Length: 190
Image (cartoon, rainbow, N blue to C red; front, side, top):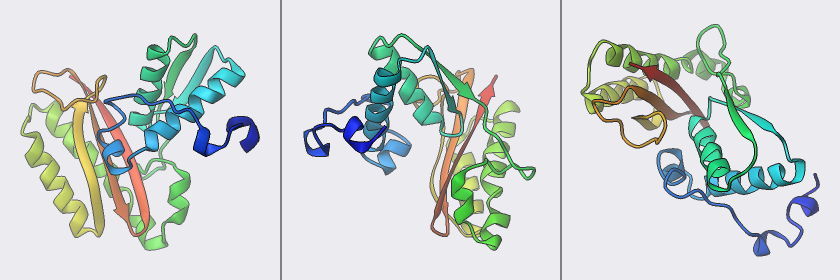
């Protein structure tokens, strides 16, 4: 669709769709308004196309959860499905952003997945000192040249901070490597 079709009254007069709570945490805290834009454009697209199903990658896990919440809250008659993250052989999540990495940065980029994989392994072994695990991985990434934005261990459904009793978790990460912001996540079922 054209810009005029999406925003017939212009951006200044635009009605927005906002999913409270889940849109303001984690990535939303770093990028205010981002998920409002996502929810607005996706809801407009759903209204125009009227799909029965829509598929979104799990790499942007929070975005997937925002869209699921929006569809539920607005009683949209469609099913939302997550598609597992595709990875390069070295574990790096496939993303168009990877094209912005220099050769040296590309060699370091898999450390993002390694960091969250280590946290997952520790949790599966029964470790529950979440903050210490996060601090260790942030330090490792910083030494390697990353600027970590966040590593979070959250309830996989609500994205609230994980309790020690939670059985479905997700570890989410965002870190800058040079000018490129890399995101990834890994899910844990206990």
